[in-house]
Length: 539
View (cartoon, rainbow, N blue to C red):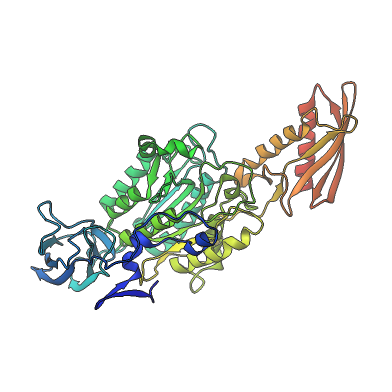
């Protein structure tokens, strides 16, 4: 994409300038699979070019900059203004500007702008033709500005939604994952920035005494940070829970807040429902633009709402519209983004560690697997480690995507923490757990499970699994999975008495055998005896 370009007359048109309209992630694969592509106008005639920036003229102590823009035949479309890589004005045209006029003079106020830093600054103007399908490559002016230098601070926002409105969307690990990331980031940040310069916000459904991750509370948190942050600061945002794409060629990623109530994506096509229960990528852009911090990180460990079925075989890529939404977010805010989304809730929670796989990878990196000089939490190094580790952890689990990283072109990495050996041990990292899948039981005489023992036992196993990090095992509601354990057995009845013989199987190999006796009238006691024996055997 950086090496190829069009030539029109004497004008070079880079692919990045056409990205907004023509870029289609995964295009080759879609063509090979004969998928329906979105409809775009063919480039079969001369393209109408973008307005040309004729120069920058600063006045005062860089308090204002005047920019002259000249129409080259394609009209004067929106004019973006970025300061130090972050969009400060989405469209600098005034209401009186005629898109067909020959020239336009823009006056951009820089006085006391929160994105200004002490020292070298960069202002960039990106112009568009009137149709909005071709942008300029960007015109840049560098300038030196002096302002009072502040010690940098870090703002940590960790959001996890596991307990949604109703029960159909609930997740086991998202709330706890947010708490674990919150703890880990705080440990490292307080060492690097000091306790006084570390500002942390936890919004988790597992933290019942704290702030709940409703849309109102999330927006309120960002607005509070916007009042405190300066351009030298760092902000790290972590989101765990359900993500969703309502569809359409220009679809956006929507993060479901605690207010969400339905697993059916059709419900969220209603704009009023979306606005009250989700935070879109567009909304997140605006929230982050209000925060002056220029060093920004977004971590998304989510699953796709609306596919809550027992399917571990369907491995799907993140939709191209969501990838494009992430690119827009990165381009307009200067964000470093990593997303390790799963195709469905089952694959999101299909982890031997009782944690989202992206979260586990990040925590393991902070524990020592991805530290610069074995002590500094470098954001690029951490993201790269997670991108490489998640696929290894997800072997055999369909629906888990290789994490995608979106970083601004040419942007430098930065540290978000320092960890010594004692602090590394404070990073909460779950241990590998024993996995159980659907049980099989049968009356040896009737050759059927008329007592529904398998279902009842699976409910017990699921109840243990739902304890999250404190559970001894993990239960997946699927028929099979390589390396997982399964309870398989028969039972016989004699009046009220019942005798159950069963095994713990792993890949058809017997791990342990049991015989338990009880009565139908006290079946729950017998089931508890079976579960206790299973739990004891895996210690």
